[in-house]
Length: 289
Image (cartoon, rainbow, N blue to C red; front, side, top):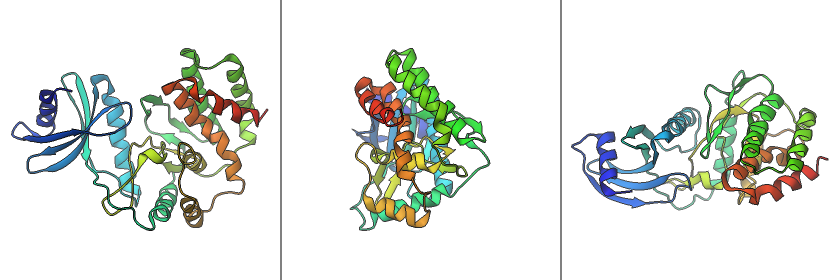
């Protein structure tokens, strides 16, 4: 991105009298351009930028950060605002300076997530659709967790994969067969407020060395789907799960349901990154034939 574009975005966000002192590209996933920016008299900020059509994605993320900050004891970056300037959409937020990992980092993360999951609602879902990565995440409200999981999570991703030719007919058939009996395999609990995209890349160290949650895809769902996601792509330390279970014990057999729930993020990754994730999906499906 050109320096002039960055300056214009900063002026749009803070006012034309604000000077952009320094910028540095930083990692922020494969979807957005991300920068650490230093602004006169205001300090450092984290800036995400994408094309103008992604404004709704940034607005949904900002609303998710607000929801987490209202209910979560863990560190959540303060969002300033999503905005639109010329052909660019952006999200500006607090820059989180990482500290040395606290000795109780994983235990505190487990306790904090357990407290978040105790925030409940009358229905599963969310008041608006949002995004997981750059993909639409269909929400709405449902009184039935199996119905919500099948229709708003699995079938929605199957439809995307089918339209792009990523899902072989045999795998799709196996997924549909599993959906027909999945209500017999899941436990039922009241809805929990979920981060929604909780893997190791979306948990960073805050300035005190404790966990900070970023990039949410919030909704009210069964908390086991959140815990299942944490076991993918690197996983979390065992002390995290012990702490979580101490503060908010899980129903017996929860670990056997993790594979079922991980079909959702694996289908998301199939739709985002291609057929490299098919083998993990098919291995899970074999266990339920």
